[in-house]
Length: 487
Image (cartoon, rainbow, N blue to C red; front, top):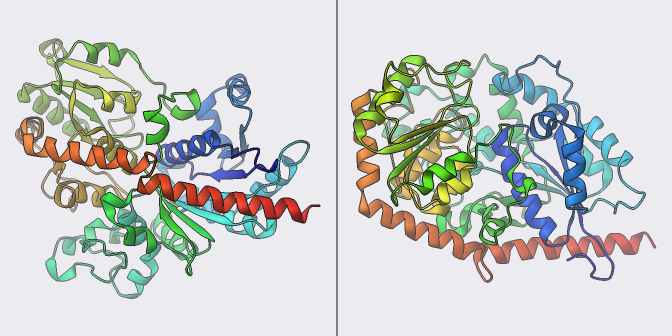
């Protein structure tokens, strides 16, 4: 795309500073960079430090791909603040950082850097609204959730007006409380499907008002992109995310085009945790579809008692497993595994702190995924044809888990964890779920069908491929007009 009439499209991408949000936008940024865009990827300083660790690595990344740069701005929170462990305070701080973001972009544009063509903003980063307006460029709203969860968030204030929010969790799965008023031809939602921060117990937490405010602000954009694909959720779902008739397109899974082409640069794998590649060598030694992959993402926590039950359930299942045990998984502490457990499972188990997840899910030895049901993990598993056991923790994960099981039919879950976050899932339940997902040929067949649909969508002529081309051409035309106005 770069070089058409010497016009360069310059996209600024601004994720919410959490691992899953950064992952989705970094994949999209790489996709645009491969099509000739000049990319400015803007993190908060805290996120950048977690991702790069040193200015040297950041510099190396810049020189490895000269049309891709990283900038950062302060979130105004003190260094010791927990950020993602106090999400409401993080949201509130970021709302006020538009001036800092705008000052950064104005300072770092010019001197060979092309003018900004558009700002691609995470759907919950309303601080970009004033920046786009003041710089007179379109704000492109990027939804890192599935379309149904994005619609529920976009129309959350309407649901509040209708009395669906705050959610009384005692009514979370009552049929007469099902939500059927949302657009997009999406399945009817249980109250428990809504983003968990809308539940009654959060009304005194800053996160409740913060996400409700972001819902109202999500209408402020001139273009909308969703990290899903039409064959999974339908064309009408993406259309329902449109702001006042603006283009609204499904363009996902955004990680998949570069993955299929073998693009595996460091920029494609930005992680706040150090990845352990040794697990891939261990997987090489396992039989096809014989390993259960266990990972709860970057934020989910479990009690020590629950981790004990999980460990013993995995052991009783008889299947091999690769288990991601973050150093803070046990309510902020390292897990203590049951006595003798590691010795008893040493011939069929591997424990790591973090993995290169895409490579793990793509490995032929992996036959199932026990997951927190974050959208990145869900769509990655779908794209690799791996059935799931969902164990949601917060946010949009409850909707993703239910849709995986009931709508897309490529997963299982545990009864009532969506309405009782204190329920202890027993080892027998875990054993049963593992055996059922690993041995379910019908579910594996359905997973393979969705895998092929996802890959077809992002390949030449597919729905997401064509939608991305539409977006690219629209931004190129804008860049051309912008260039003419400067002459």
